[in-house]
Image (cartoon, rainbow, N blue to C red; front, side):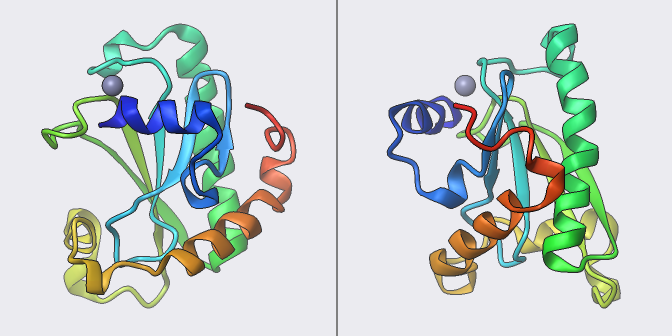
Length: 153
Ligand SMILES: [Zn+2]
């Protein structure tokens, strides 16, 4: 499924929230099944299933992107800082993808740390509505952290 989503971005038919920025090695998308606004995912554009398969170029880009995505999320959502995680365990997404998750200052204690994952994989009714996702995508693209990437395909 991750590769299908990449093809949709390549075709230019992905919604704004699913193709926030694209770099040579990575696609930045909002998670489609999160109840936390700003839950972003950096998806490897190549089909790789383990971090050890990254090229040095992909790894260098990822390092910079983690900083820039975190800065953009802080600017656009007012979050205090970010969490990052990489598992690639879901049967539909055995493809390297790095979660970059906003950590709001007022996050309830029972959602801190790894328990933040209770906010992912939620029912349709709890998901952040698509209009809000697209609005956030536009705000993220305007942050200085992303100015170098906007317009890349
Ligand atoms: Zn794949």
